[in-house]
Image 1 (tube, protein in one colour):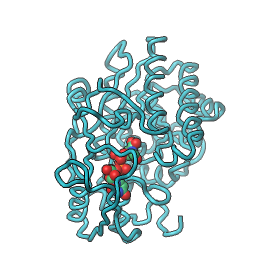
Image 2 (cartoon, protein in one colour):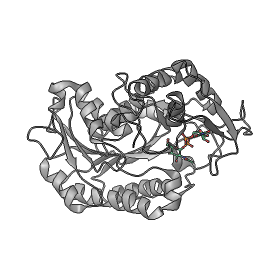
Image 3 (cartoon, helix red, strand yellow):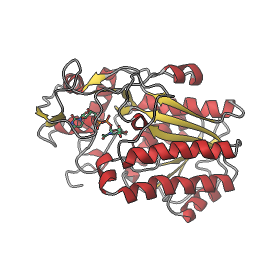
Image 4 (cartoon, helix red, strand yellow):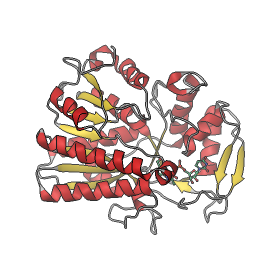
Length: 364
Ligand code: UD1
């Protein structure tokens, strides 16, 4: 089915009887979540401006979902900075909730161009709240990030740990969390879940959808993947003198399909809990893996050499960050199912099938 304007029937309420607007639904986490929502019986309307994604990603979601589920997927090209685009999305149908992914997320870029981050992430989200309010839709699942813990003094990170921003990108997430709390306090009719993602990696097991960053990747796994397929010569390991078991920094990597399931659990919670309020949850595995452990796991999964070069620390990086998963387990009934081996297996499957991402060529 062609991707275009709102198509009659698509995006409407599915078997669950519920319809969800997914902003940024063509992105890495957005596609995986949109697919899961369709599988769970939701009607899904994606709004995306393709700033860091491509229409093909949604075609792949349709391919995996099949024609019956895809009939409930709709797409509206739009930018949250435009009130007109949002009006178009909300005029198309009634939504029971919004899952809000849309935003910029490159730390380095946010330092160079904070204006872009404040306009897209802050102004875009404020517009979204306004449109939701006007259309009587007051349930939101918001993409926050472990970045709000800054350089954690105590690990694992628990939801009521001290929050701090390490860069403009992180500051937009922190401000948007505060904004959500303020809006909800002012109008208790709002129900908002703040999901703090740790490090999402992996891909859908079909290998049809996965992460496809534009330009040279900033994040570890996309970089390793491009070394494995021969697009990049070697991995720069940023820091080998950290006080950790092998000297490299430790993060909590989580399979993107587990993360997508976390959104389903969050939505269920919103629909099942009257006067829910505004609550933050970590979505991580609770397990830390070092850079070199990750390299070894990807090497094993792919059978490829991953040449590494030891480099100085990347400015701003924390030594060790991983989640406490207790709150999400207890209150959302959700916990991650996949381990590092499966994350690398599925990411390699995506990489092998799509060495140059969705566009399939070296020129991007
Ligand atoms: C980064 C962002 C964080 C964001 C998260 C999303 C920074 C400082 N933080 O977190 O705000 O929410 O991505 O997933 O960018 N590494 C290398 N070589 C590389 C790339 C990374 O050694 O080429 C190392 C890093 O130094 C780090 C680890 O791998 O120790 C993970 O890096 P990355 O994937 O960028 O994630 P975070 O730094 O945790």
